[in-house]
Length: 224
Image 1: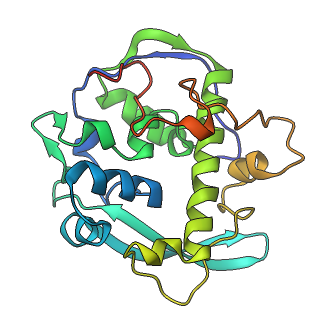
Image 2: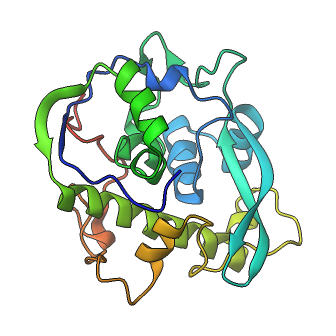
């Protein structure tokens, strides 16, 4: 991982090949909002979704005020890395898929890690196809990710996460201004960052107050 974000334009269109879903060792990160959307889609209580499909741990992050333990809710994957919701090459919960799945490959994990990006390009059929995605578009997705992280931290800190059945220790969640140990993410979080753009508009065009229950991956449509 580097201190610089790779925001060079590239062509990408999701082909639904499922290859990125086959390599989810450790599981897909699940925000509280993702959990509620999945629960509604599956017709289950959030606590039951966690019991059947998730793992819960805590991990340490280095913040401006020292190390904090942060709750970490993830979808399960099998021993080969396949996501628990992958059926064939398709996502069985596509309309309610987690944010990080919908946003890929426009996520910090890819933009800040040349090796991760190179590996994804090697396995993903969608790179080099479809529309050209600009640096500004990528910034909007990355800032939306920061927005999601902030909302998620607030849900844990306020007790809202525990109220819907997410296990929670006494350790505090990371405050909204202390998102990650990666300096490139801190630059986006910092109010003084010259790179920040408005978070009022989702990259797909929906305002924050009118976000659709599902988010389409870049290069796809809601009907796919």
